Length: 262
Image 1 (cartoon, rainbow, N blue to C red):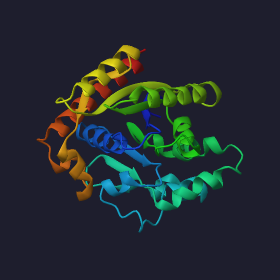
Image 2: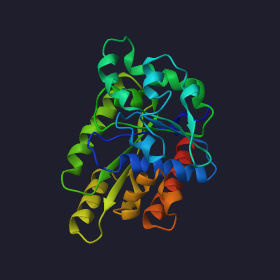
Image 3: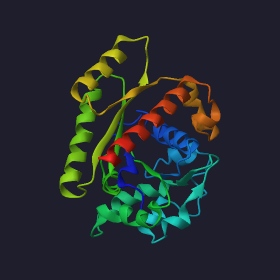
Image 4: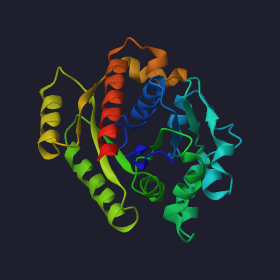
């Protein structure tokens, strides 16, 4: 099995912070650098699935079937157009999982147990969480060993960040002692505004060791890529957004190497 620190959940209960864009882009760049990557879509909106060119309404098997239908994860995993990046897709049926999971013993562990047979086949497992702190996100945090928190450069960013980090602490204390904060990534940075600069500085003051050096800019090409079913690397590798996510992937590899060496 690969080092457990390579199982990373991307989580923030606030929507629209670039979480799925970060999951897809980071996965694509890690794959381009020779890593074998599995992206697990745990969001009923299935944006990671659509963003990689798959029709979320026409899937034979999805995360829902793996969690609640007894389907082995290996039978639901699909290739993507980026070599080295594979996807365990989500469908809108996953929305029902929040209700169905409540009556199951050990419900917080279902995703971790489902991924165990395949996790060793990959260098990184990235879990794209829904914008909530419900049972699906808890399942992802229990399955992960690290959490990446995308934070939009806007007012009240710290408030949402604190709530997510408190949840991660509770999961670590009660369910998954392996879980740690792998990193905070600042997204949608607009250099034309003082607010973006102020938010980055404030978050770095509060969490100096956790914040990635790389800041992801607000970039039109990043917004366009999902509509073509492509990562930013495959849509416009020369864009500022692509350059930023390439740098973020390098940082992620640096952190992984440092944590593995500890």
